[in-house]
View 1 (cartoon, rainbow, N blue to C red):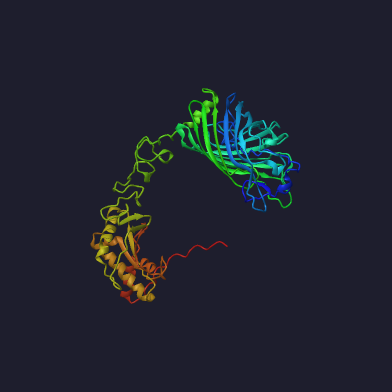
View 2: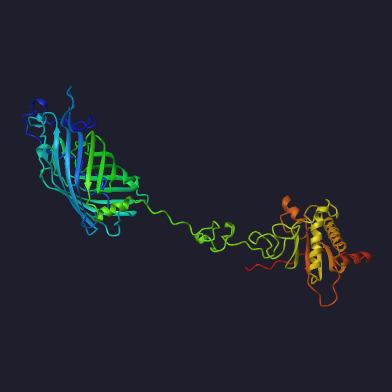
Length: 543
């Protein structure tokens, strides 16, 4: 037969039931897993990092009830489990005091108020377990880690070092003491969110005596705990608690399953404005150790004197976080803070909160005006006129289109040419412009050259008919010799079929003849046609 809390981990009895009563009794140990903390904001079994405020005190009782914390389950035979300790009601009387806002010390006096079980003859003692017993007196200490000391209402990371020392005041025969001094250093690491949610982790080492109880070796352990506190009604001080706590057995006999007493606990807490913190809850044991009960319940009443620094700290924690300040928007344009480049002038979001401007007064604001210095006019778009002067060019927004393979200008392109005539009229300093005709790469060189010449001449004639002085307009065809786009795509070929307007530089002497006039004169004399102009060679690349 083995001691266990469930049949999941059966424990062999050291001797058969018929002879066990005459065997020497096994040394006993403290089966109490529930070792709470007495600070009002600690998570019952899981400590949080913040010490009590300086010279503030807290005190009160913790009541805990556990079901079947210690049972023996026979390995063979028809016998059922034997509950050595079938139930236990324990009272922990606790008191804590804070020192310098950096540390706290406390004391826990455990009292087994009531417990019962079956006959202990199977472990060498006649009769049931003692009903009332004193437990091991426990001293507690906590010191915040520099750089990780967090206020009660603060948020962020926190860390602390802890130490628990238990003195052998408990009745070992009643499973209420370990029989010698035990101690447990530990580390607390936690994080408090701005919402008030707390996540806390505890870990450490627990020095305990080495004993063998009914064939199971017990000794040093590594306690652990993970807990959370979630505000439900923060202004009223009501929160929910959840935690997993236990200890990992560091020693075991060969072939023996490792002892890991652990519990899952949940609870509710109320931080009252009277300085009293009420906590109650319960949970389940994992069934993986001698001292892991099937079921447990707890409740506590921790008192902090009113108007003390700790009471004030808890009241600050209960206050919900201050709402963020209202957005800074003095001009009420919806653009907030640093994003508003003109905080005192109303403007659209698209213009970073600044008023829209329209430098050319064409009704198209500058941030979307592609030609902010030139009025759009009646026929333009995107803030640009259909034709405008730019450098040594008259730039047009739309292509001049012709009937396919002809030099007849389509009516849809006449408004563009009328705008070119307007630009020339408004800029008399333009001595002369050259109307350039270009084609794509389809068909032969000679065909494209002649087509481009005819088309350029048609544009020239239309400009003269529109009122432009004949001596201010020349034309020349370049065929397919000066492509700007890829002739391998339909889009590129369409863009290469174009008319351009190049502003000729003024001449100090007599104006040179137009290329088309030279060509016409050459044909009249029967001379050789001049070769079409070619683009200048690109500069040589540096090696």
